[in-house]
Image (cartoon, rainbow, N blue to C red; front, side):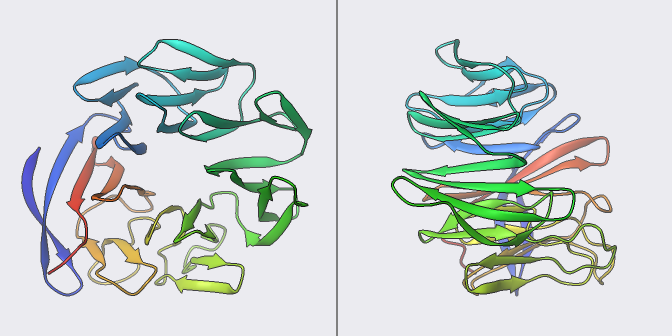
Amino acid sequence: MLPHHVLAVPGELAAERLEGGAGFGARLAWVHGELAVVGDGAVHWRGESWAAEQVLGLWAGPEGPRIAVPDGVWDLLQDVQLFSGSVVAAHGDGERFVVASQGELIQGEQIESISGIRRVYVDGERVLLLRCTEQRCWAELHEEGLEPLELGPAGPSSALAFSDGIPVWGEPNKAEDLAQGAVRDSNGPRLEGLEGEHLGQAICADFAAGEHNLKTLPNQSRVRSLSGGVELAIASGREGAAMTVACDDAHLAVGQPTWLDGGRVWVFELPLSL
Protein backbone atom coordinates (compact mmCIF):
# COMPACT_ATOMS: atom_id res chain seq x y z
CA MET A 1 0.00 0.00 0.00
CA LEU A 2 1.22 3.47 -0.88
CA PRO A 3 0.82 6.61 1.27
CA HIS A 4 -1.43 9.26 -0.24
CA HIS A 5 -3.40 12.27 0.88
CA VAL A 6 -7.13 12.68 0.31
CA LEU A 7 -9.06 15.92 0.49
CA ALA A 8 -11.29 16.09 3.55
CA VAL A 9 -13.85 18.77 4.37
CA PRO A 10 -11.92 20.90 5.08
CA GLY A 11 -8.22 19.91 4.85
CA GLU A 12 -6.41 16.68 3.97
CA LEU A 13 -6.08 13.22 5.48
CA ALA A 14 -3.38 10.61 5.02
CA ALA A 15 -4.53 7.38 3.41
CA GLU A 16 -3.13 4.14 2.11
CA ARG A 17 -4.09 3.02 -1.37
CA LEU A 18 -4.50 -0.44 -2.88
CA GLU A 19 -4.80 -0.88 -6.64
CA GLY A 20 -5.92 -3.82 -8.74
CA GLY A 21 -7.51 -4.85 -12.00
CA ALA A 22 -11.11 -4.93 -13.16
CA GLY A 23 -13.64 -4.59 -10.36
CA PHE A 24 -11.04 -4.33 -7.60
CA GLY A 25 -12.89 -3.01 -4.55
CA ALA A 26 -16.35 -4.11 -5.75
CA ARG A 27 -16.94 -5.61 -2.29
CA LEU A 28 -15.07 -4.88 0.92
CA ALA A 29 -15.17 -6.30 4.45
CA TRP A 30 -12.99 -6.05 7.52
CA VAL A 31 -12.25 -9.58 8.67
CA HIS A 32 -10.44 -9.88 12.01
CA GLY A 33 -8.60 -6.60 11.53
CA GLU A 34 -7.56 -7.25 7.91
CA LEU A 35 -9.31 -5.94 4.81
CA ALA A 36 -10.87 -8.47 2.43
CA VAL A 37 -11.28 -7.18 -1.12
CA VAL A 38 -13.15 -8.58 -4.11
CA GLY A 39 -11.58 -7.89 -7.50
CA ASP A 40 -9.68 -9.44 -10.42
CA GLY A 41 -11.98 -12.45 -10.25
CA ALA A 42 -10.86 -13.30 -6.72
CA VAL A 43 -11.20 -12.54 -3.02
CA HIS A 44 -8.00 -11.18 -1.44
CA TRP A 45 -7.25 -11.35 2.30
CA ARG A 46 -4.03 -11.50 4.36
CA GLY A 47 -1.89 -12.10 1.29
CA GLU A 48 -4.03 -15.00 0.03
CA SER A 49 -6.39 -15.06 -2.93
CA TRP A 50 -9.34 -17.32 -3.71
CA ALA A 51 -10.79 -17.45 -7.22
CA ALA A 52 -14.41 -16.29 -7.12
CA GLU A 53 -16.62 -14.89 -9.86
CA GLN A 54 -19.85 -12.96 -9.26
CA VAL A 55 -19.49 -12.52 -5.50
CA LEU A 56 -22.90 -11.55 -4.09
CA GLY A 57 -21.84 -11.09 -0.47
CA LEU A 58 -18.67 -10.83 1.63
CA TRP A 59 -18.44 -10.79 5.42
CA ALA A 60 -16.38 -11.90 8.43
CA GLY A 61 -16.89 -15.45 9.62
CA PRO A 62 -15.56 -16.85 12.92
CA GLU A 63 -12.07 -17.45 11.47
CA GLY A 64 -11.89 -15.80 8.07
CA PRO A 65 -13.88 -14.39 5.15
CA ARG A 66 -17.12 -15.91 3.97
CA ILE A 67 -18.69 -15.26 0.58
CA ALA A 68 -21.96 -15.79 -1.22
CA VAL A 69 -21.97 -16.74 -4.90
CA PRO A 70 -24.98 -17.64 -7.08
CA ASP A 71 -24.88 -21.34 -6.12
CA GLY A 72 -24.01 -21.19 -2.43
CA VAL A 73 -22.16 -19.81 0.59
CA TRP A 74 -18.50 -20.66 1.30
CA ASP A 75 -16.08 -20.35 4.21
CA LEU A 76 -12.92 -19.56 2.27
CA LEU A 77 -10.34 -20.30 4.96
CA GLN A 78 -11.87 -23.70 5.74
CA ASP A 79 -12.70 -24.41 2.08
CA VAL A 80 -16.17 -25.54 3.15
CA GLN A 81 -19.48 -24.93 1.40
CA LEU A 82 -21.91 -23.88 4.13
CA PHE A 83 -24.99 -23.62 1.94
CA SER A 84 -25.75 -25.16 -1.45
CA GLY A 85 -28.56 -23.73 -3.52
CA SER A 86 -29.69 -20.69 -5.46
CA VAL A 87 -28.57 -17.39 -3.85
CA VAL A 88 -29.97 -13.95 -4.64
CA ALA A 89 -28.30 -12.21 -1.69
CA ALA A 90 -26.66 -13.19 1.60
CA HIS A 91 -24.90 -11.68 4.59
CA GLY A 92 -23.66 -12.85 7.95
CA ASP A 93 -22.33 -11.85 11.34
CA GLY A 94 -19.85 -14.32 12.83
CA GLU A 95 -21.18 -17.85 12.74
CA ARG A 96 -24.69 -16.81 11.70
CA PHE A 97 -25.65 -16.05 8.10
CA VAL A 98 -28.89 -15.49 6.22
CA VAL A 99 -29.57 -16.38 2.59
CA ALA A 100 -32.20 -14.94 0.26
CA SER A 101 -33.12 -17.47 -2.39
CA GLN A 102 -35.90 -17.30 -4.97
CA GLY A 103 -38.91 -16.29 -2.88
CA GLU A 104 -37.38 -17.55 0.37
CA LEU A 105 -35.40 -16.28 3.35
CA ILE A 106 -33.25 -19.05 4.81
CA GLN A 107 -31.82 -18.85 8.35
CA GLY A 108 -30.32 -22.20 9.29
CA GLU A 109 -33.17 -24.70 9.39
CA GLN A 110 -35.78 -21.93 9.27
CA ILE A 111 -37.24 -21.11 5.84
CA GLU A 112 -39.73 -18.28 5.30
CA SER A 113 -41.61 -17.48 2.09
CA ILE A 114 -40.72 -13.85 1.32
CA SER A 115 -40.80 -12.47 -2.21
CA GLY A 116 -38.76 -9.75 -3.87
CA ILE A 117 -35.63 -9.76 -1.68
CA ARG A 118 -32.73 -7.85 -3.29
CA ARG A 119 -30.31 -7.40 -0.37
CA VAL A 120 -29.75 -8.76 3.13
CA TYR A 121 -27.85 -7.31 6.10
CA VAL A 122 -27.31 -9.20 9.37
CA ASP A 123 -26.42 -7.65 12.72
CA GLY A 124 -26.58 -10.13 15.59
CA GLU A 125 -30.16 -11.39 15.75
CA ARG A 126 -31.54 -8.61 13.57
CA VAL A 127 -31.93 -8.82 9.79
CA LEU A 128 -32.53 -5.97 7.35
CA LEU A 129 -34.03 -6.75 3.95
CA LEU A 130 -34.30 -4.70 0.79
CA ARG A 131 -37.47 -5.83 -0.98
CA CYS A 132 -38.84 -4.74 -4.35
CA THR A 133 -41.92 -5.27 -6.48
CA GLU A 134 -42.44 -3.87 -9.96
CA GLN A 135 -43.94 -0.74 -8.39
CA ARG A 136 -41.70 0.03 -5.40
CA CYS A 137 -38.85 -0.94 -3.06
CA TRP A 138 -38.64 -0.71 0.72
CA ALA A 139 -36.43 -1.58 3.70
CA GLU A 140 -37.78 -4.13 6.16
CA LEU A 141 -36.60 -5.14 9.65
CA HIS A 142 -36.88 -8.71 10.97
CA GLU A 143 -36.33 -9.49 14.65
CA GLU A 144 -36.97 -12.80 16.35
CA GLY A 145 -40.35 -12.91 18.04
CA LEU A 146 -41.64 -9.76 16.32
CA GLU A 147 -43.65 -9.16 13.18
CA PRO A 148 -41.62 -7.86 10.19
CA LEU A 149 -41.57 -4.05 10.16
CA GLU A 150 -41.59 -2.04 6.95
CA LEU A 151 -39.23 0.86 7.61
CA GLY A 152 -39.57 3.14 4.59
CA PRO A 153 -39.09 3.65 0.85
CA ALA A 154 -35.89 2.57 -0.87
CA GLY A 155 -34.59 1.75 -4.37
CA PRO A 156 -33.12 -1.28 -6.18
CA SER A 157 -29.53 -0.17 -5.41
CA SER A 158 -30.14 0.87 -1.78
CA ALA A 159 -27.53 -0.11 0.80
CA LEU A 160 -28.54 -1.48 4.23
CA ALA A 161 -26.73 -1.08 7.55
CA PHE A 162 -27.01 -0.30 11.26
CA SER A 163 -25.55 2.97 12.54
CA ASP A 164 -25.16 3.13 16.33
CA GLY A 165 -27.66 0.28 16.49
CA ILE A 166 -30.27 2.08 14.40
CA PRO A 167 -31.37 0.62 11.05
CA VAL A 168 -30.42 2.87 8.13
CA TRP A 169 -30.77 2.45 4.39
CA GLY A 170 -30.11 4.35 1.21
CA GLU A 171 -32.51 5.94 -1.24
CA PRO A 172 -30.19 6.72 -4.19
CA ASN A 173 -32.99 7.37 -6.70
CA LYS A 174 -30.92 6.16 -9.65
CA ALA A 175 -33.85 6.65 -12.04
CA GLU A 176 -33.29 10.44 -11.99
CA ASP A 177 -29.99 11.62 -13.46
CA LEU A 178 -29.59 14.61 -11.13
CA ALA A 179 -31.03 13.01 -7.99
CA GLN A 180 -29.27 13.79 -4.73
CA GLY A 181 -30.05 10.50 -3.04
CA ALA A 182 -30.32 10.16 0.73
CA VAL A 183 -29.72 7.95 3.74
CA ARG A 184 -32.85 7.33 5.80
CA ASP A 185 -33.87 5.90 9.13
CA SER A 186 -37.36 5.29 10.48
CA ASN A 187 -37.75 9.00 11.24
CA GLY A 188 -37.12 10.03 7.61
CA PRO A 189 -34.07 11.33 5.71
CA ARG A 190 -31.01 11.48 7.95
CA LEU A 191 -28.61 12.82 5.31
CA GLU A 192 -29.25 14.13 1.80
CA GLY A 193 -26.74 14.01 -1.04
CA LEU A 194 -25.57 16.60 -3.51
CA GLU A 195 -27.08 16.96 -6.96
CA GLY A 196 -26.13 13.91 -9.04
CA GLU A 197 -24.52 12.09 -6.08
CA HIS A 198 -27.13 9.32 -5.70
CA LEU A 199 -26.17 8.96 -2.06
CA GLY A 200 -27.02 5.74 -0.25
CA GLN A 201 -25.51 3.05 -2.48
CA ALA A 202 -22.96 2.21 0.23
CA ILE A 203 -23.21 2.60 4.03
CA CYS A 204 -21.13 1.45 7.00
CA ALA A 205 -21.42 2.71 10.58
CA ASP A 206 -21.24 6.54 10.36
CA PHE A 207 -20.31 6.72 6.67
CA ALA A 208 -22.25 6.72 3.42
CA ALA A 209 -21.39 7.11 -0.25
CA GLY A 210 -23.05 7.25 -3.64
CA GLU A 211 -21.10 7.50 -6.87
CA HIS A 212 -18.44 9.66 -8.47
CA ASN A 213 -20.21 12.91 -9.23
CA LEU A 214 -19.44 15.04 -12.28
CA LYS A 215 -22.52 17.21 -11.75
CA THR A 216 -20.86 19.40 -9.10
CA LEU A 217 -17.56 21.27 -9.17
CA PRO A 218 -15.02 20.15 -8.29
CA ASN A 219 -16.21 16.68 -9.36
CA GLN A 220 -15.51 14.21 -6.59
CA SER A 221 -16.17 10.83 -5.04
CA ARG A 222 -17.50 11.85 -1.64
CA VAL A 223 -17.87 9.86 1.57
CA ARG A 224 -20.36 11.56 3.86
CA SER A 225 -20.71 11.43 7.65
CA LEU A 226 -24.14 10.61 9.07
CA SER A 227 -23.26 12.40 12.32
CA GLY A 228 -21.83 15.56 10.75
CA GLY A 229 -18.17 14.61 11.22
CA VAL A 230 -15.25 14.74 8.80
CA GLU A 231 -16.18 13.96 5.19
CA LEU A 232 -13.92 12.72 2.39
CA ALA A 233 -13.72 14.05 -1.15
CA ILE A 234 -11.64 11.91 -3.51
CA ALA A 235 -10.99 14.10 -6.53
CA SER A 236 -10.74 11.48 -9.26
CA GLY A 237 -13.04 8.76 -10.50
CA ARG A 238 -15.19 7.59 -13.37
CA GLU A 239 -18.56 9.24 -14.03
CA GLY A 240 -21.43 7.38 -12.44
CA ALA A 241 -19.16 4.80 -10.82
CA ALA A 242 -20.69 3.50 -7.59
CA MET A 243 -18.46 3.42 -4.53
CA THR A 244 -18.14 0.83 -1.75
CA VAL A 245 -17.32 1.29 1.95
CA ALA A 246 -16.40 -0.97 4.86
CA CYS A 247 -15.74 -0.13 8.51
CA ASP A 248 -14.42 -1.71 11.67
CA ASP A 249 -13.60 0.01 14.95
CA ALA A 250 -10.23 1.23 13.68
CA HIS A 251 -10.54 1.65 9.91
CA LEU A 252 -12.61 2.94 7.03
CA ALA A 253 -12.06 1.48 3.55
CA VAL A 254 -13.43 3.19 0.43
CA GLY A 255 -13.58 1.36 -2.88
CA GLN A 256 -13.65 2.78 -6.40
CA PRO A 257 -14.00 -0.46 -8.38
CA THR A 258 -14.35 1.08 -11.84
CA TRP A 259 -11.60 3.68 -11.77
CA LEU A 260 -10.02 3.91 -15.26
CA ASP A 261 -8.89 0.41 -16.33
CA GLY A 262 -8.96 -1.11 -12.85
CA GLY A 263 -10.05 -0.40 -9.31
CA ARG A 264 -8.58 1.06 -6.16
CA VAL A 265 -9.28 1.11 -2.44
CA TRP A 266 -8.44 3.87 0.03
CA VAL A 267 -7.80 2.93 3.67
CA PHE A 268 -8.14 5.47 6.50
CA GLU A 269 -7.56 5.16 10.22
CA LEU A 270 -10.45 6.00 12.52
CA PRO A 271 -11.41 8.34 13.97
CA LEU A 272 -11.01 10.67 11.00
CA SER A 273 -9.35 13.81 12.33
CA LEU A 274 -7.70 16.77 10.64
